[in-house]
Image (tube, rainbow, N blue to C red; front, side, top):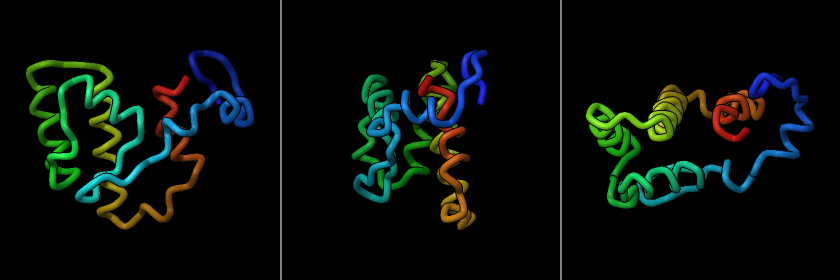
Length: 109
């Protein structure tokens, strides 16, 4: 695996990853977010607890991004959209840990 133009093997990636920050946690109304996403949303003024679905949260994030582009929030938006896709297509159970790790590697290293 290559991260920031440096070859790194899977064992090294696991060693340096902040596992607690990457784990998805259940919140009210079926909202699934990890600590990184929660921190970004809070920093941008989003109270994810007020939303009744992931789609509603994603809609508001996209509305915000249409006027105020932000790299970190855009990444969170993309991650939420991908999570919604996998949940809706019932592919969630088939997502391997390795695919999930590569999905998150955009911001953990």
